[in-house]
Length: 494
Ligand SMILES: *[C@@H]1O[C@H](CO)[C@@H](O)[C@H](O)[C@H]1NC(C)=O
Ligand SMILES: *[C@@H]1O[C@H](CO)[C@@H](O)[C@H](O)[C@H]1NC(C)=O
Ligand SMILES: *[C@@H]1O[C@H](CO)[C@@H](O)[C@H](O)[C@H]1NC(C)=O
Ligand SMILES: *[C@@H]1O[C@H](CO)[C@@H](O)[C@H](O)[C@H]1NC(C)=O
Ligand SMILES: *[C@@H]1O[C@H](CO)[C@@H](O)[C@H](O)[C@H]1NC(C)=O
Ligand SMILES: *[C@@H]1O[C@H](CO)[C@@H](O)[C@H](O)[C@H]1NC(C)=O
Image (cartoon, rainbow, N blue to C red):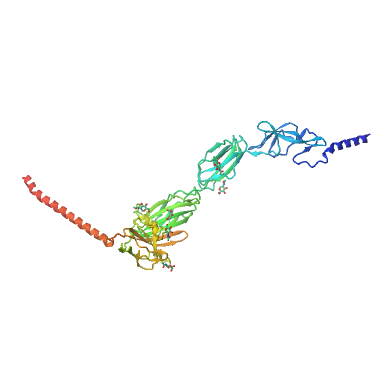
């Protein structure tokens, strides 16, 4: 009897199992459940999801609340388990376990994919923009209205590896809408700041530290002449607006004895330099110094100073008193320059350039001495040009404007009626410095009355003679009046 019962049970189990056989392997995501079940398994969704109540199995139609860790949000707040007919097998419906989610209009819709927690706020990749004075970024809110509480703020990041103190910033705002741009208030260059997006009180959604870009440095403030060494010294610039990578120092020196002599240096100094010897000069030399600092962003504004080696506080203006020339011929457009080698150094550099500037303006002449004048070009007149290159070893009389060609230069004829300055220039270039030494000659190509060294003298003699004549006239006049008035005075006395 017991055996019969056992056999019956076995048969029943077999019958129960039979419909499941012969069907193909079900989709692994969809759990085919034979007949109708009253329970669902806990769904295998995102591990960051929290289910309430938290169980292994849920009853059919039992509502389950979903939530995520802070800063993330689930696409549904409520879900429930349900069954749907998947297919009919041997005339019987086969049910499938499904989950339904409540959408924003409280309708239950079938969830077909995995449910994931999504970060509410996204900083759009590639929109972080950093300049020297601002940091900004674009954000989007992935779910409508989910970012209402989110705030964004900027803060100064203390970083002891940066050399300068910076002020705190107080930028903070609430995000509005679906997307937007958050911009930090005006910031200081070359300083670290953090941008944080957070959900009060303390849930950080996004944080990022950025250093503002470098900018050009301020003017150097302190530079002085050290009388004991004859060197220029300066106070190093702080790396506040960017790391100081070097200095530009331009020195223009003029000797008190010879006003036609001009020495100019264009120096590129390293960031560690704090002094530079002045070009050696006689006592009373005047110096004009210009200096600027450099960062990766470029050169800052220049500071200008003037000095004199005799220590006087009031520097004389750097006068140009150029040498004279001979045999000026306005008709032929020539003048003869009595050249002497500029260089005292016996150096290999003997090649001098002869530069012509059609002006007596000191600023323009200095510019030509340290500039990069090109060969003569008629369409660029009246600009400075190189008329010739010559190897000078001793004094030479050079005819300027004779039309000769050589070394790629043209000694073009001078134009009548113009003022001219000619510069005999010696250039020495190295990696750190360009040094220009110039001697100037000045003259005017005035037709009919070529001014020479004697020309001024003649004018002076004429002026003196005229003055003498006038004085003699006045003296004679005064004497005459005195003689006339004497007798009348005597009468009155009587
Ligand atoms: C950021 O958004 C603004 C408008 O909101 C847009 O004009 C700008 O181009 C965006 N920036 C980037 C880098 O996409
Ligand atoms: C400070 O600056 C240095 C140098 O740029 C950088 O390596 C470091 O990460 C910064 N430290 C902080 C706390 O920002
Ligand atoms: C020095 O001279 C060069 C060439 O003339 C110029 O470009 C530069 O700005 C000058 N630097 C300063 C500090 O004046
Ligand atoms: C000299 O030339 C400079 C520019 O090269 C100009 O600014 C200045 O006004 C000129 N001075 C005179 C007196 O013409
Ligand atoms: C002269 O200057 C003009 C204008 O600057 C230029 O077009 C021309 O090529 C120059 N001529 C020579 C020979 O360099
Ligand atoms: C000056 O001498 C140098 C070297 O001896 C030579 O290369 C150069 O061409 C000469 N220049 C002139 C203008 O003769």
